[in-house]
Amino acid sequence: MTQTTHPFGTYAPAGLVRWILSRTERLPDENWSARRLSLFLRRCAIHLLRGRPLDVERYGARMRLHPYNNNCEKKVLFTPQFFDPLERKILADTILANRAGRECVFLDIGANVGAYALFVAAAAGPGARILAVEPQPDIFDKLTYNIAQNPFGSVKAVACAVADKAGEMTLFVDPRNRGESSLKVVGTNEGASIRV
Image 1 (tube, helix red, strand yellow):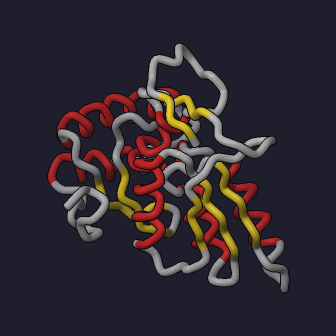
Image 2 (tube, one colour; image 1 turned 180 degrees about the vertical axis):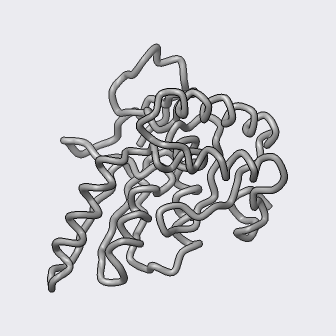
């Protein structure tokens, strides 16, 4: 069994890691010293995890997060309040304002492990239609696992890239932050590339 096939809850936070999570997820988001403390505590927890993921609930959804080479997963796991708070507020306000008889349709391009797609699914309810697009095969596996752990039924995952033209393209994979992988060359381009 791989880490995406074990039942949800297998990797529940425990011991010192659970204590660290309980502290970092409640730190104030506009405080510089709190952010510095969260980074220190996050590094300690990641060391203690030794490559294991964690199963948590974030933004009203169950997720298995692997906080190693993906900044999105690190933020959502340890400091969910720091993960794009303005964007999430705009989405939540828009969903709330449009609840009166209008259908929610959301396209998450570069969905990563599904934080946005699942956030919208939890906020919008069962009438939403959400398409989560992710081209990286291993990240796509994490995305589909996270979708399957939730009762929403409104999120569909698609394994492809989105560009301004049809055809096969090269995805440049950032080895330090998989969420920064792109169809255009990024950083030093020292990572792998995959055809999509």
